[in-house]
Length: 130
Image 1 (cartoon, one colour):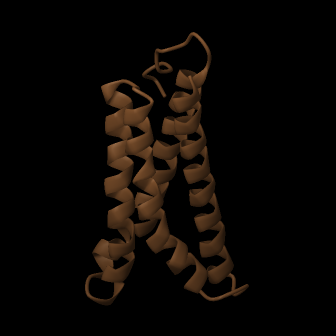
Image 2 (cartoon, rainbow, N blue to C red; image 1 turned 180 degrees about the vertical axis):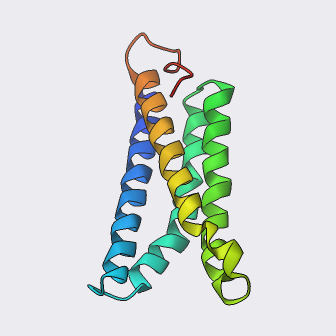
Image 3 (cartoon, rainbow, N blue to C red; image 1 turned 90 degrees about the vertical axis):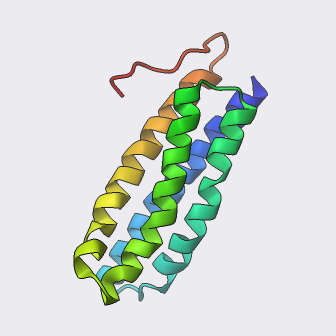
């Protein structure tokens, strides 16, 4: 039970990090600051994402949930590289915001699944429609 709660908390904290990252992008875009904070967090989030599959495995969740956490790790490690491609391949770099949307959606889905799994007596993930 406690391991499931830790997994859920890790998922929600990661999702909050994604929302903060989007805010920092907006702050840079609208000249509240430069893009430095967005860049720093953008390089830090992949490291934080490593906690997702680790806590999922420790919480003994289903294979599909662990796989979803792994996909998020891969996408977050690709994300800064997409932004860096702006100097050499703008078409590839244009996928940076698209990938960000995908990371957000998958993180939201994972956080909801983790919350459902952490509830007492419930060991099945939420409906596959999510």
